[in-house]
Length: 289
Image 1 (tube, one colour):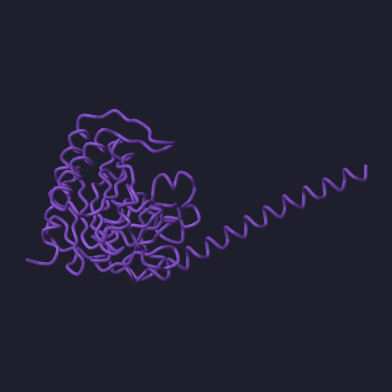
Image 2: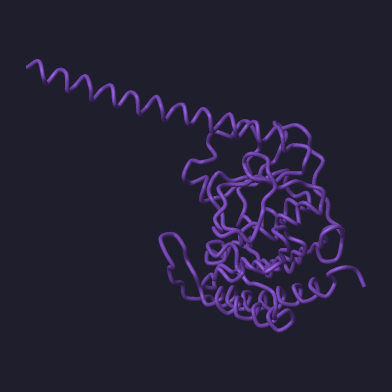
């Protein structure tokens, strides 16, 4: 038996059983509540979360737990092994009947994911990986793309971010393809269905943990916006942006993002300086009247 085979088996079972719950609500509809502004939750999220926790805790009672739909506890920080879960990443897509969402389960050891499973019940696609053992989709080996030039890159992007204009600066520099949840984007990237994905918007650990291992084990690379590997089971779960790629594109995309951020920062400085200068001149004019 390979290392962590039992953990992977339980994670796959939990993802499929939670996915069956999600699919049931997807087909017949579900009421929506709001946890906060632009942050919906449904019974599918909560019931899937409960099912995953029952199976994981039953098999590994000593492990820690971090989930989007469970109140966080600092107790997990003292555990060597922690399960990081999003029972339904892509609730917005789920509600809108866009079949681009996933159940996400990852096991983290010493800050790094070592087992990852994502399941898209709408398409019956199970993405799975274990550290050092590669990534599979429904049992078949998966690999990232080989695209090497940034202008040729197909970058999977968030619809919400695009609506806010956050991708305008990158259109024309890469091929932007609007795609579902961040976990779904990472899973599809691992199969070569896109060349990269990134976000300048903060994401929680449960959004990207499982997908990080899927991409890495498929031959790709996942880092923060400065090129450092992502570390999980941190006191603050919110990560300030991330980038995932097939590896070949990574440095070029990091440079593109850095250029955009520097230009954006400069524009903000100039704007603030202009406003301050305008106020100063207005005050001076008023004093001479």
